[in-house]
Image 1 (cartoon, helix red, strand yellow):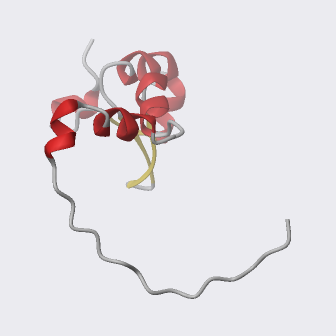
Image 2 (cartoon, one colour):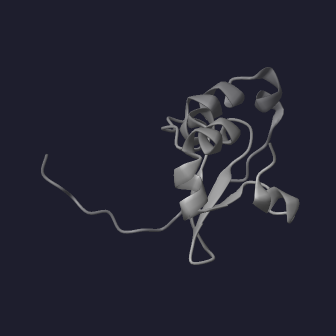
Length: 93
């Protein structure tokens, strides 16, 4: 069964009323490709797989950067660091 909007070349785009009526289908398709839901012809939301959302919103710790700099090839890199002149403010902890 092909969604009407797909026939018009708008794969993954749903009018709100169609998305509500076929929510299970929207969720199923979102596992493979983001699904856009429109309101009054304008994009309102995008439904994406949880794995994609989690990857895009993962907390970045810098651990990957530390690991990269520990690689033997990184030891051969020459960084030209420029000092930054900035005021320092003292705060009570």
